[in-house]
Image (cartoon, rainbow over all chains, first blue to last red; front, side, top):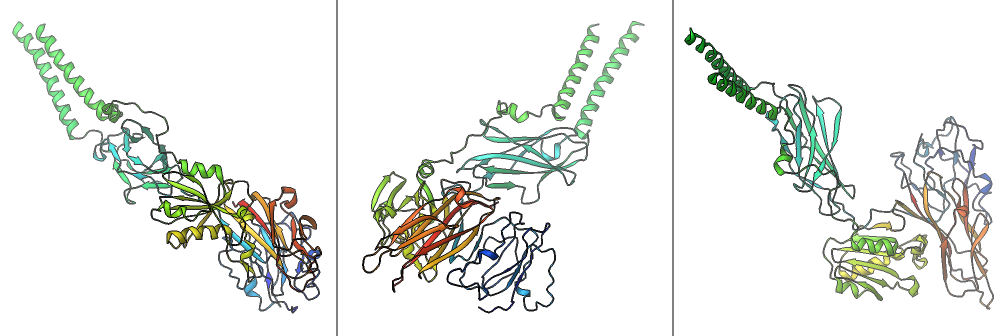
Length: 272
Length: 290
């Protein structure tokens, strides 16, 4: 192995480690039959910020360092290079040519560090076989009163059919929003075993309030389904308090009262 | 007076009708739907299909490290049965049996669950170490080309005439484990070779297991040689005086592979013969990555 400096690994660290320093690997005098690993020169400290160590790879990309699941590399041959760990600052001045191997990561996920192994097989476990991977099916919500008949401070009931033939429906939530504000209000929907529908109530709102809502359901395998009217949401605007039908009724009542008053006056005239 | 009373009653009736109308439209009748269906809200969990079917219950109780696939079509269970060395269980929906692996003894057989809906799950039993899936016969050119579960699954899919391109792993004993790792060190010369491993304490590790392989631990004139599997210099397993290849496996305790420490895992042999067989060690881990 040559002893040339061809690479650099740089780490940001909040606290300087007690035994931070330079690790030199693969120098000629270290690679003997008796000691292929360089135990004396390996840093051991419990106070290490989890970080990516990328070693022995044929190619190092600086992209996606925070998604470093596949960074475990195993190879017998290692390009000689200096590894600097835990330093507060490293200047690359004079280390030309090593840009490709410079790695900087402020935070990475905790992971197992394996060095000098001949081979690593790493795989995800799960999901569980034969487990449900199909989300629930949410029907079209039915609103009562209808969207154009919601009066001021009138509660609105939304009912919907939700099914999941595999693991079953775990829960359903109606999320509603008032006047396009940033806040969404969650209402857990209740299931009625007779009607086989899920219900939620949106509290009554003042006149001219714009209300939009969507329904989110999960099954017992945590698959999620959303019914939001293809992104448009289901919506209504609270109508004025006295629509024309009510005015008509009031006119009728007033007419009755007028008749009553007239009738009360007529007998007095007859008496005189 | 009669006239007055009559007019008064009419007025009351009109007001009542108006009141009822307003009440219903103002939300006072907001349980309208419920009233119509004649029910009240039942605040209980909905009735749903049970996710724990008898099939998965069987595997929950039986299986450990597994590889699985759904081939996307129904399976003729009669064909599946032809692959088994021993049929272990049969129902109308699925069969379970053991599959012999090439060049390995019966106690290395993998178990295979085949469901008529297309599911094939090849597994080792609950309690058996993950490292058992390493087939040292399949170590070639510096890598493990396949593992035993893959070989067993392949035998089944070949018999069913399907080509599998994507498989998944699962450990029924550790449902919270989302990662599995096998780390291998080999040696074909006399001496010792090792790798370093550091397991951060942030990871929940459910299993630490090992596999130790020695191709030959005898001399040409019948003498005994040794192969050791060591962690931090302590011998965990030794194989000695075996003229045929031997694989041993087992579990490690937490103290043998403590977190937040660099451990040196090594394989050693003192074979001075000119023909150098393979010696190897594998550490198997099942853990939960955050």
